[in-house]
Length: 80
Image (tube, rainbow, N blue to C red; front, top):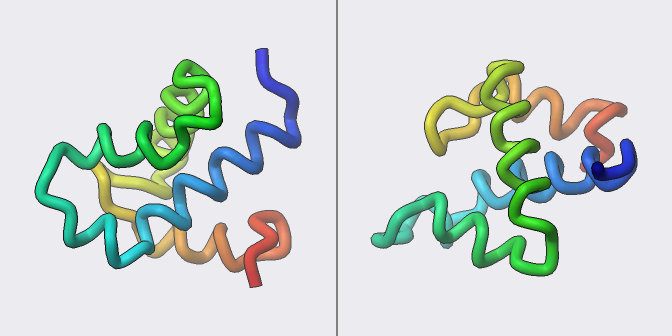
């Protein structure tokens, strides 16, 4: 089980990756890119967070939604 803080950190890292130009230009499977970039994190935790972001509507497939951008730049998301 991951802590609430770690959960939030992973979600923010995923959203940042989805905004990264390297991600949008990648030719290989985008899910592999996410796991490679977050290899310092537990793969199950990353999978859980990605599922959460999709469920909340912040991510659609491997594209960040407007809601995801709003969350990322919100006080809760903490990336300003």
